Amino acid sequence: MNILVTGANGQLGNEMQVLSTEHKQHEYFFTDVEELDICDEQAVRAFVKDNRIDIIVNCAAYTAVDKAEDNSELCDKLNHIAPGYLAAAAESCGAALIQVSTDYVFDGTAYVPYTEEVTPCPNSVYGTTKLAGEQAVMKLCSRAMIIRTAWLYSIYGNNFVKTMIRLGKERESLGVVFDQIGTPTYANDLAKAIFAAIEQGIVPGVYHFSDEGVCSWYDFTLAIHRMAGISTCKVRPLHTDEYPAKALRPHYSVLDKTKIKKTFDIEIPHWESSLARCVQLLKETEK
Image (cartoon, rainbow, N blue to C red):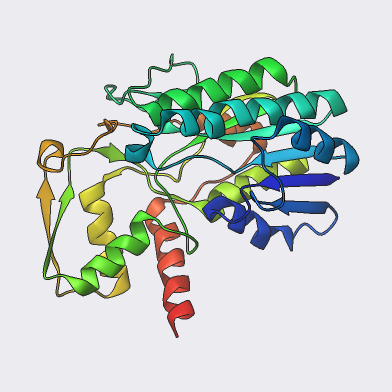
């Protein structure tokens, strides 16, 4: 199959590139904005048609949650309009589309894990535009698969894990929010789940994927420092209102993964074991 992966320079896009070496039976087109501007409808349609694309995996997104509050137009363009262009192009060629979405489509006021049946209710520009993107994709592409994920990190790009390691080495103390609960997700694990869907055949619909287990950002930070061997930085728990941010964060955004596990018969690792793998890779790249 011919597979187009957009946003290839991001965390998930890079992990897709790494795993593609294990799936050499396919032809890949890894693009970022330099190779294909997904906000250009004509360019998207031509690229998909000319390269006879069978599956699009859209890893591109505007993910700066706080900046999105002031840049709603650009955020909407990337998270809503562009996925619609990809979906329409896919539909015109009979291709499938995997659209990566987010836990931010929920307001985080629940206290049990979110299933795919729960009605979304975003309370930020980022979450609102990502939900609009989901709706556009499902409307325009009959072979569309939405995968919502949360707390994504990897050895690539900027993310919470790398930031906490850097700050842990630079500072004597650090305050981290303890009253926001979710699940860290290693982008490599998400990429494996995407490949499982590709190999077994796309089953349209909405799915949730994160690693197993739950924690707060505070617990996550303690685990990062422990695994990275950082012992000189004292981590203090903060309430959300002690750490002001422009965009509202979900207080509880644990995703129920039952559907994706059953549909594609996949096992998902616990977040701590995946974090250990990532931190070890970061240590090796530093050498």
